[in-house]
Length: 243
Ligand code: FPP
Image (cartoon, rainbow, N blue to C red; front, side, top):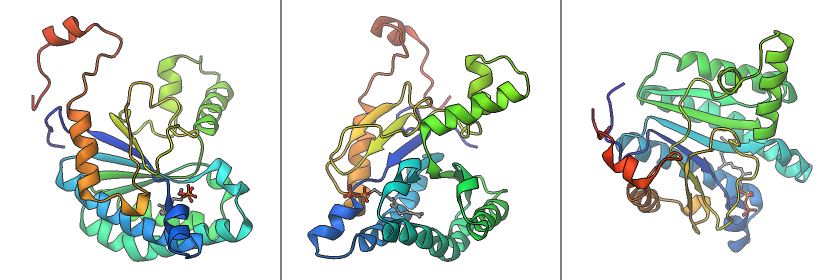
């Protein structure tokens, strides 16, 4: 992978919130908002790739979303299946490598097969890694990692736990965006977001366009990332930009 300037986040994570409100405001069923959300995601993937972002992680269905009305849960499962069928060929052509992150045990066998097939088809791609968190929760992830280490008799350290988490194949997110006006993490990437820069947008996810992404990128470029150090220490460090 080519190196990107430090001002462009290598990894962006997004809580795509606001689909329901987008639909409500138009007197449409909530699922219409989720459908529009898929369009917004397609646009966002393309824009991220164009700007040099190498990893995009999105929260599509949380462990807690099972508590929504059965009709909406069914619609989101259906949407995943149709989005896979429709979008994967184009994502593959664009060099996007897909990973589905979350508890697959809770999903129907047909859905699981679709996820595995999409991952296999795009496994050799290297333009952008797209992690779709589906039936995912940060607490679930930490618990499954700890359980796997304990079962293997591996001592639990920060390093071993880090390597057993579901996102071990990518570095931690540099920038975490939440759309929809709420300012909380909602059980997303609890471990991995330890040092992510946070950006909250009032835009509803279906309205999160390229200009809104650029606003988040500009805010990120203006942040000083200290990772626990002082400002003076950071200023004295050699620049990592493009090198
Ligand atoms: C949160 O908005 C959004 C979700 C729970 C689903 C996100 C899904 C997509 C953007 C579509 C992509 C999905 C797949 C399956 C690839 P909300 O419903 O909580 O909105 P609200 O806060 O306005 O009610």
